[in-house]
Image 1: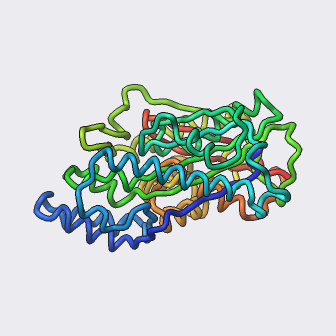
Image 2: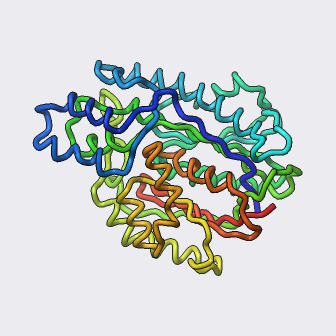
Image 3: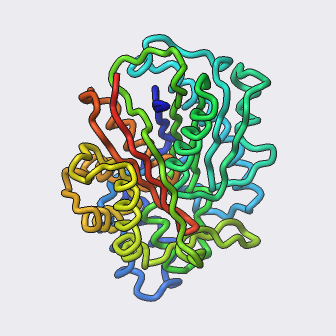
Length: 360
């Protein structure tokens, strides 16, 4: 069972109160959206207090081209990747001995909020002393499912290469995709929900000799699920001025009818009952999404309290968010053989589930 030996997160520098973001949105969309004051209640009802952004709030008061936004994405995604990788490899909270970048065998770079060829991981290699033989596996377009999918693919890699140490790096700069001239309800909801963040996880194969400071989650199994003809549920519309968010109001109801059978089937395959799961590591897509998780999987608010806390303090950062949740679970010492389930959903429409077993 490959293990997640270390994890780290990085908050971009501009921390903003939800009320401040609501006021700017009201200013930008004044007289542009019918019944705006009523719709702005999504800012107050989403259980989000603060979010972190890579640009100050006033940056959005002027026009920015797709080219300018994307160039800034490349610059900052590279910078934040370097920071969060260094934190992960040098974490004395999880690792008894720091790792040098040259010891890393592969990197999965996950993002959906900007475009870069060569991918950001290649640019990061110019700033950190990785081996020039390191495998690079960039994953683009997975959105909110990206963090869980990255961990799953790292698990697959480590099963095939049990001596390998693999990094999963998730960077999303959602604020750079905000469209001040898009007056759709999807854009308004996105403005109330999405934020910027970075996370990195170290996944190690069975034969890696590495000592951790506490019990860490080992990956027992993973499962992926895809819904046919669901491209309009979640994703981007790509237009001349950039990425426009697609965010269907049907997402909570889809979770209620679609997620439960998927998770039941996965747990049954692993001969696990829901009652055996001590930890539920859920990507907090939003308040209604967490409520749908609870309803569908028969969970209490206690099961989702860490996810709720991450949503409250950070908003939805897309792919890194579930790793922010996992980091909080990993910071607490847990008993051997304590089971957990990591779940995230994203464009496709798709789901990713990972069964975890905490061990020394």
